[in-house]
Image (cartoon, rainbow, N blue to C red; front, side, top):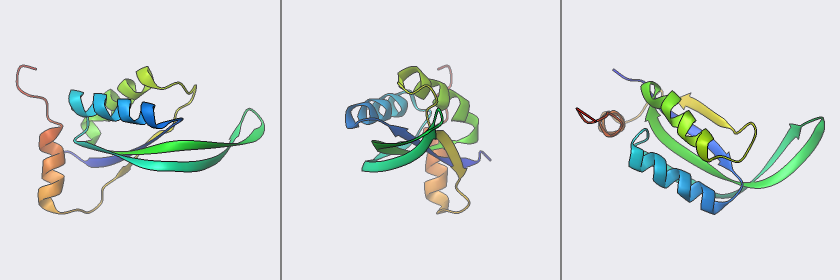
Length: 110
């Protein structure tokens, strides 16, 4: 059984968050994507502490589709080192986890 994941990605603006969500849901490496209103990130970059307002995406996928998802995000993302991290969904209702697996399984012949 495929491991279900929640992938977290930060982007600089809402338009890009919506574009990434639309593309990865349509291409089906993810079953769903949620956008979280602006967040403030504080981080080290090139020897300096930086602060930025960003948008956060939560995406549901499986371990089998993570590499494909990360590649799709990288093609659209402007950051040199984008945050693309995944955490395992260690618990969830059986029907929801099965839905993630079903919706991210490629159609035969696709």
